[in-house]
Amino acid sequence: MIAPEKVQYWAMKKEKENLKFRVFLKMNADEDELDRQFLALHNELFADYDCSKCRNCCKRYHGSIPASDIEKDARYLKMSKEEFIETYLGELDDEESYNTRNKPCDFLLDDGNCMLGDCKPQNCINYPYTNQPGRLLRLWSVVEAVSVCPIAYEIFERLKEEYDFKNKQFHY
Ligand code: SF4
Ligand code: SF4
Image (cartoon, rainbow, N blue to C red; front, side, top):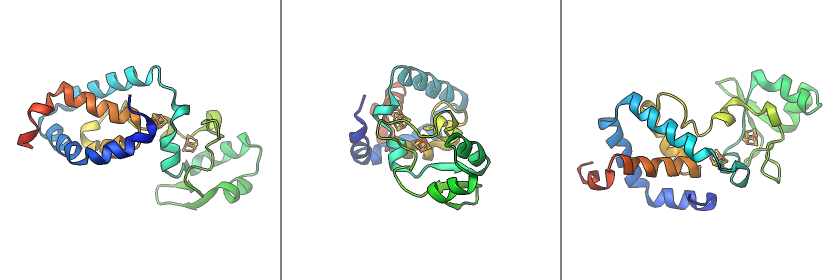
């Protein structure tokens, strides 16, 4: 598995190849079969991976906190709703979520855990979304995740092998 600190560098080196592979999948992959392949690799690779040793997703993005979570998050941190927003969050965006004030995310602790504990937002739990259906229609988000998340990077590399992309890429 690639080290978390090397993902961005190698994803940049492979940018052209990854974009070609995206086109290849668009043209050749069956939607359901691709979801099954993503899911199997996701489950296999996350099974014994310790995300607290990586946390690239919390370091490279602002946290995105749904407005509907604010009350329970504030309660969890024993703060008032207003105090919680004032301390940690910026403006509410169009999708009814608040970005954290800072990047890395304000809730990332030094030990790699999330200050929000079990109240961690669903979008953080789902990241990098490689176990979610509809991957064929969201390959841009996969390519983006490949430059952040070691597991997404490895999944994309394994898929290239499964589709024998090395021997087919010159057509794309
Ligand atoms: S989901 Fe990916 S980027 Fe986030 S901590 Fe786990 S391995 Fe790292
Ligand atoms: S809320 Fe927690 S899991 Fe989500 S980005 Fe921030 S530190 Fe990471």
